[in-house]
Length: 415
Ligand SMILES: *Cc1c(COP(=O)(O)O)cnc(C)c1O
Image (cartoon, rainbow, N blue to C red; front, top):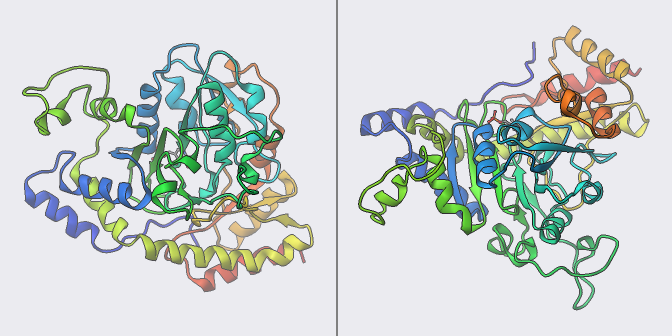
């Protein structure tokens, strides 16, 4: 059986865990935690990183930091994992679900403005499959309506939002223009350097460095892992101090250890969002192998794409369409069938041949939990992806021969 996922171990995980254990410091915010956080800040230009016990927890921290009050509205794509919405629902938000693009599961940035009301507080772009949402349009809307942006970058480690094509002289770049060609001067525009774009010298902005906050996952199904694990990146300096407090049970412990206050106590809300050093030690081993992991995954991704292209050319199925401003971190390989029946047939046929492919995301607006609270419109593209999208096996140790076999088995269905 070719599994859908297999967690990859670099071999150093247990060595670093042993080091952490022997150091006598195994609670959170020790050496490994700080090494991991520093790595992400330096490499991707995030202003401040805090490891968390999951991406869900990082999103919960973000929801608290956004100061969500009951009745506030948060715009989220419906085709996403539960946590993107759950964190905000727990703070009492009303979720306003947005549709996906027709040709990509990412939120359709052109449909967001119509959803904004006086109560809107936050937009949550989810970078599906690690491919960038249209962050220029989203940050422009945030600026115009004074909203906060929380990137759900759970799948988006080591992926980028590319610089826009060069602007006509003195003007604003082509894809910053949305219908009307007015430049919105913005301290949050990635062109002006919130987060990583400036730091990366025009090579693009790391996903997660553009919004006010971003949340990453190191769950065992992601590119780099720690079993369960996550990280909050804070790109707006105004929120850093409060983030540290919320991270450590509402105490100003971090300030205390920096010598800024002479005793620490309970100063705010919060929880125990920080992971133990054992988790961070595991993650550090993965981080050290990030480049190798990414290049192996991209190889697999490209092989799938080339192998399945003839079927897509004949219209039997659709392959992922990369937005022009996105890079691919090969988090997942998905394809889109022409119908629910086609997808069911495909998954069953793969299973009969010893290959586990999976589908995911029942649109959240029709979920058992949220549907009774949902009063919005039908979201046709979300429902289409919920019915037609399949994920093929994707993991570091997947052999090229296995990928070839999977491609062949899929081809057989259509012949
Ligand atoms: C995996 C994932 C999450 C949740 O991550 P955890 O670390 O398991 O909490 C949230 N959002 C998206 C889009 C994900 O893919």
